[in-house]
Length: 345
Image (tube, rainbow, N blue to C red):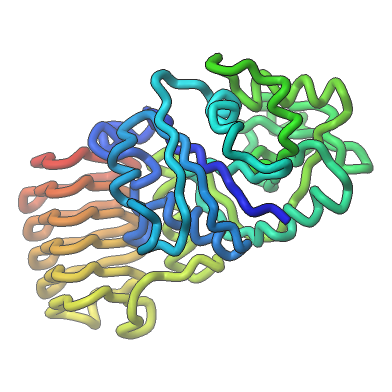
């Protein structure tokens, strides 16, 4: 039985700048909930509550969010690195806290897999290392795994030509590992699982792949973040929308003020204390707390964090706004694009 998980949450997240200049990527929200909290919910579904967070960039914010874990029903440990150690180096750094078999999960991916299926597959086949894989349509931006008939990984192809690809299975950043794998990692040395450790396991014939059913999305870009949220709001995943259903496609959290519910459209999630004036159109978007959308403004496939304001007749499509952003009246913002905290546009 796997009782502990390592959640990797120390990266700089350069592809989501300037939003991540002010907030670590794991705390960027999807349907008004940090990505890393969605990860924790999947772990709890698998009865894993002993969670070790490896941290570096803006570490204190993640520690403050989860605290002692009581509010989230987990027992967290935090390990802050003095320098970036890479994915494998981060896990090696917490080796003293680990059991013989453990789970590694990236703190900035969105998925709804039943992790128990991956854990059972690993143990029943006596694997040393198992990568959870997911099939994607466009493989150009991923490292693709090639498997034999026993689901043993025989090689990787980085960003392959889609016309020549033999596989569409990509690394999800979720691994089930035996502790002995860490013998391949030197302590206090920057080491990456994909670049440094997994190729060695492939040579030894000790790396396996498992493809569970379910939803997975790389939310490392604004386009990926927006598409992932659209899937969740559309109800095509097991990820629950954390709000009260007001009417078809419209969810609210706490007290909100909506002047023109019929035009609102949806699907959308609106946070506590927000005000949506007459004539506003919102589709496939999430709105944080205390947001104000002025008359006849439009919001399509966008993410607005807390305390934002959107002016009269402004249009946002594919936009991620950090906290306390202000969009002037009569502006058109077409994404995918993001703006950091306190931006005035």
